[in-house]
Image (cartoon, rainbow, N blue to C red; front, side, top):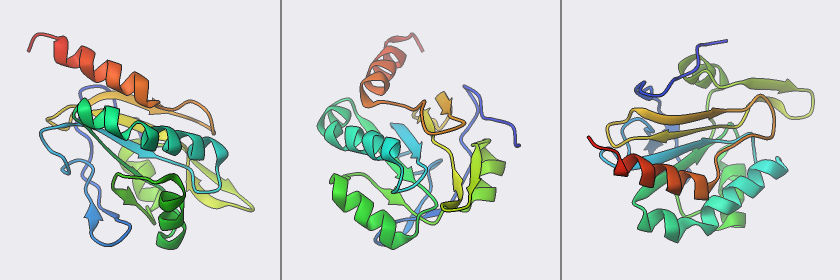
Amino acid sequence: MAEQLKNGDKFPDLAIPQVGGGTLHPARDFDGEYRVILIYRGHWCPFCNEQIAAFAHAADALSEAAIRVMAFSVDDEAASAAFAARHGWPFPLGHSADVDTIVARTGAYDMRHPGRGHFLETTGFVLAPDGSIVNAVYSTRAIGRLVPGDVIRLVAFMRSLPS
C-alpha cells in the first residue's frame, strides 16, 4: 500500500473526469479556499449515500463557512450522475477514478469484491487554502468518514489560529 498523506502534506495533483464534462483537479480547484475532497465507495454503498446526502443538505452552511466540496468514486458517469440527482448534489462530482492511481497517490484503501469489482474505500480530506492537508480520514471499510458539522467546526478552528 502507498504511504498515506499527513497533515501539512500538499494534496497530489490528480485529474478526475467530472460528471457533465470537464475535469476535477482536487489539488488546484478552489485554490485559495478551504475545501473538502470526499472519495466514496460507490452509488451502491448505503453509508456513502448517507454521507453524500448529509453534505448536500449542509450545502448552505458549508457555503456560509466558505468551504468548497467535491467528491468522486470509481462509478461510471451514468451511475454518478444518477447518484448526484438522487441526492440533489450541488457540488462538483467526479467519476471513473482509476483505483490504482488514487491508491498510489493518496494512500487510500481499496477493495476487490466479486459483485462490486475494484473500488476505493471511503477517504476524506480537508485542505487549507494553500492545498495542504488539514485533516485526512482513511477508512478500511464502510464506516469512519468526514461529516459536515465536524468540517465546519474544524475550519472555524483553523481560521482562529494565529498565522
